[in-house]
Length: 270
View 1 (cartoon, rainbow, N blue to C red):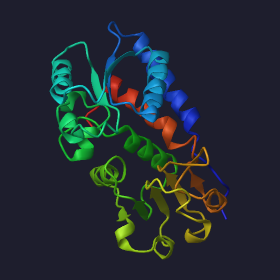
View 2 (view 1 turned 180 degrees about the vertical axis):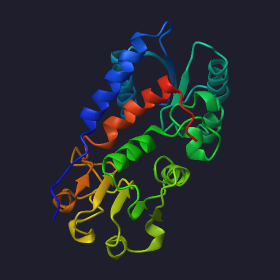
View 3 (view 1 turned 45 degrees about the horizontal axis):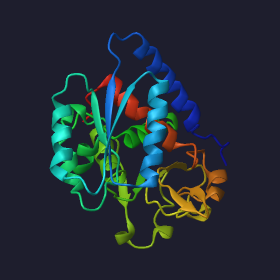
View 4 (view 1 turned 180 degrees about the horizontal axis):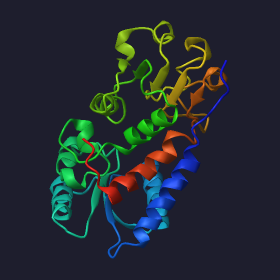
């Protein structure tokens, strides 16, 4: 059995934020991001607050646009289109999920591909200058595990992680198989893989006895259980892995840093 090695998301996030803050400090004009919060969702509000705090730490201008269910969809789209044409706004994102009465995909499509820093257009299969930050965080973990050429399985084909990740892996020349619940029982189908990337949001779906010795476990799923944040990987599986991303403290913190990296670098990734 290989010695455990884990992806320290908070440490990596802080390194990225420091590099970005140094870069921002040398800029004549501070980068500006616009964040749309559509509806009253306490979890969304918490995530937006965290982004604001970290953005300010990096010297980024953070502009919040709040809309309630009483607002008109056209007003939100008009605001997005105004910011698309505003030279002082560098990036635009919508905090997902949006309130039920609004057409999520229509709002996302309104964002310019050049300002789609959260890669939501990419998630929908439209043109975008950016990979979603969570995809970039997973690619970073894969790079650090030195396992990109191994046998990879992606569990989950969700809109925000699984589907765009599979597309990005293909784009990067990385071979991966995919699995979702329609493929049957997971327990007998993952032992042959060297790398398991899971993004189902079902706590502890990947157990120790399902994986091979020395497997790499990349966990991009989160669920709340008795007030605790849990990942797709059961913690007992960590001791069998050669490399793993813990939940919390793994992919999540790096995802936020990658959002700001998209904003500042504006690197064409798709």
